Length: 236
Length: 123
Picture 1 (cartoon, rainbow over the protein chains, first blue to last red):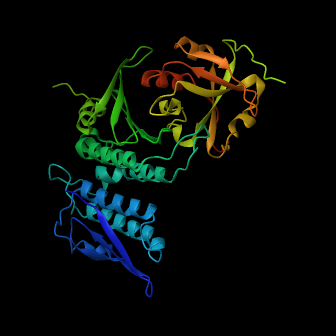
Picture 2 (tube, chains in turn brown, orange):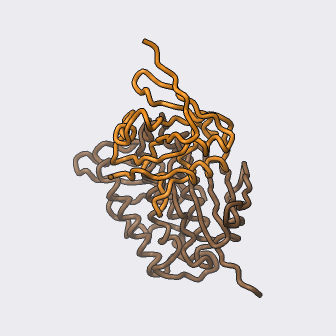
Picture 3 (cartoon, rainbow over the protein chains, first blue to last red):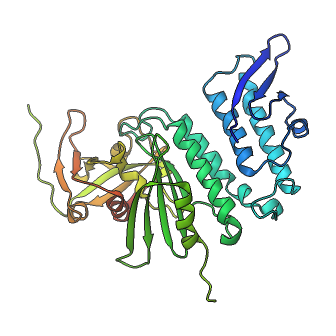
């Protein structure tokens, strides 16, 4: 599903505004994210559907494309949307893959702090590392957030820890770094400023662990590799 | 007066500023601290410890002790990975030195593993 925040409009006299969504084809009055749940044509959005909407709000606000009277309220709207999302998860209205929700401990909720931290990298300015780093590309953040959520959805329940990354970090070239650690080793994923993925896989312990570098990886590659790292091996 | 180039010995300590998000949960330095410009950095800037102080090194070039920590590498470790380590003083930083050579993700990881944390952000 392609989701895009098409426009936002505001009424300067009342400081109210509207967000128009491409996929839903509907207009959500500002401050009514709760009621918006009943307006959309696809009531069973997945976690990824929600993330895409939140990303759209987040970046739309950052890029200051929003009319000035509405801009200060954009963060409020994103917060409200997020609360609705969390509420929907808690009430099992959002079903993870397989159709069995785990309720409030749902993987997508457990990785939320990482999604937010990734989003915060968009605010980093030139030379944020003091060695000449460039600002972090929006595409890198989007791809990394999608990857984190994809892993949580695909492996979170069986991994038992929500498939949460060990660390997320900005990269000085404008990319993003995500690292997972598990019983089988660690995986360092690098998302470049164009959203391309590469990784370093480290397996085994001690002084001489085995390593493997992979360029041009797909999100599905990453999930497959992580399945061997995060999910504890059990004898048949 | 020109800048004097010193010899960096294997036992010399090198300071590297580490951005706050480049620390792991256990306080260790992550591999990402040693990457730059789309490929792993072929010229990693560090400070020669004997020509500066931790407080001075951590606060250069727009950094501060609230946003950055300070890691320490012993020169023999990057050299053991195939890097050259040379003093490269700048007019505003006579301690400036470079770790130079072909880098990759695995070397980034090993450099991080060899880095001892001297100051954490907020120290």
